[in-house]
Image (cartoon, rainbow, N blue to C red; front, side):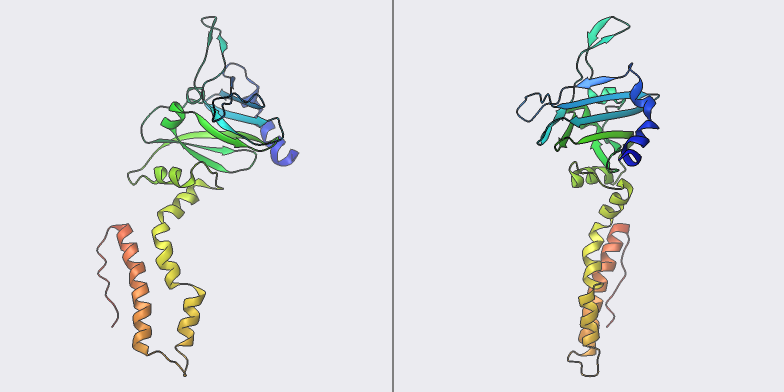
Length: 234
């Protein structure tokens, strides 16, 4: 655990050691109660933000953080509070998404930036579990809405690699026609009916394979927004 969890944090200790941008948050449950057993705080140094959660109790915790606890501003010598998104240095713009990684699990996450500004961040924690979120960065969604689709599909879950997850979602319409054509059952069926004692005509076998191939090619052409021009091999 020291090698996988503690040592990497030591390399980033400047992000956690400074006090100027340190912010502490109340963790609110769904019924509006503050869960005093969850410690949540953020920090930021030279544009690099971090966000830490720790659940100090046996049981599960689910809730939100949004607004920091009061802190004294050195400039005005007044008590102030800030929102989480502001503390993390996130811009409040349409079609912006925030990507970040949990240093503990290695999973990557995506959240809508506007939602972080308006609602804060929802987190679930098991008994004595913790998150150390780092590597925050913002990205503007592309014209196809891939990041919006990814955010909706994951619904708060983390994945090993967000870039790979986007590729999988983009290619999702191809998965069914591809698996329909390329699978062990299909190969066994073709092998069975191409033996000398075959029970299916060559034309019927060809039509079955052609139909599945055509559906796959049609989906590829649809994704590429081109005319197919494909015809059955009759």
